Amino acid sequence: MTSTIIEVRQLTKKFKAKTAVYNADFKIARGEIFGLIGQNGAGKSTLLKMIGGLIHSTSGEIYFFDRSESKDQSFFERMGLLIENPGLYPQYTAYKTLQLLAIAYGLKSPNQYIIHLLRLVGLDASDKTKVKNYSMGMKQKLGIAIALLGSPDVLILDEPINGLDPQGIVEMRKLILELNKTGLTIIISSHILEELSKIATTYAIIHKGKIIEVISKDDLLLKCEERIELEVDHVEEVLPVLEQQLNISNYRVIDQQNVHIYDSHIENHQIVHLLARNQKLVHSIVKYKMSLEQYFLELTKSAGELHA
Image (cartoon, rainbow, N blue to C red; front, side, top):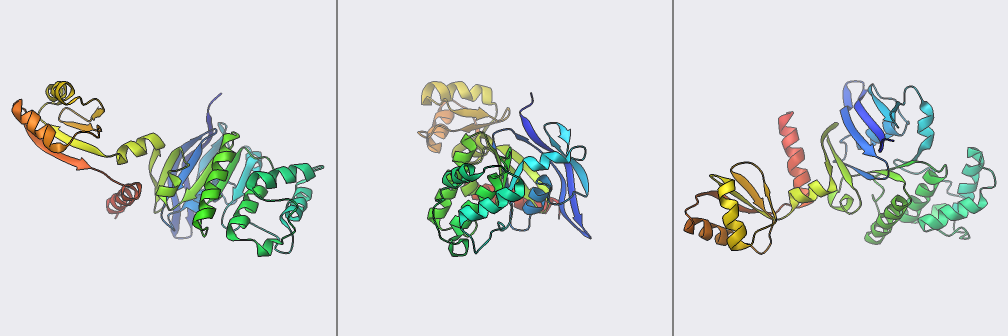
């Protein structure tokens, strides 16, 4: 059985003269936390609404378990959604809210299940506080409990940390990781890559409606890891010298002239001095360190210039 639970192919959404999402292509594996990162207005919510079945695409296809959604709309019932503001009943308690929705869903004897869901998201089923008096974090937790009410295969969260204080962000992060441990596939959007990097396993970066990169967490961290970028005449002649005399072992050959060195104990001047002593010409050497936010900003800036 394939590990791909969702595949998006050339998905496009137009609103009159504006194209909100343009030819989006990516796959989401079962059980992963898929992070959708983009600036405000980049098209994140529109894309998530199409995947969740809230709006129709203008063109393109969404496949669930290798079947097109156009041929089987029932797959949308296996989605749990928290997009924009959760639909809450301010005059009721959390327990009463879930109870009313369970009746609407046709769930039989849901009381113990409701207690389980509230405990799962960190809320107390016996709490008599009305939802209108909840903090932002408590409302977000209740929204997730509502999204989980139908026992979905996929949970979609649109900017779930927006408006939360630092403690609320930590609690939300822990909750998402705990839910993922149960095998739930989670799609989560944010405009803060640094925060998303603490939970997501794969990232799709969207800019002005276009997916400009899909990258694994390991590859993303590798791109941002501190390193020395060395350019020489012939890498294959230089590497034995570096390995034997500087004990360099953590490196990545980019091409015949360029190598990236990740050994933290090595300084630029040591490499230059050693290679000069061995009559190996150094064309350039630079120590590189980029934060995740810098990487995101540079990538979106380059994409903007390319499509300007």
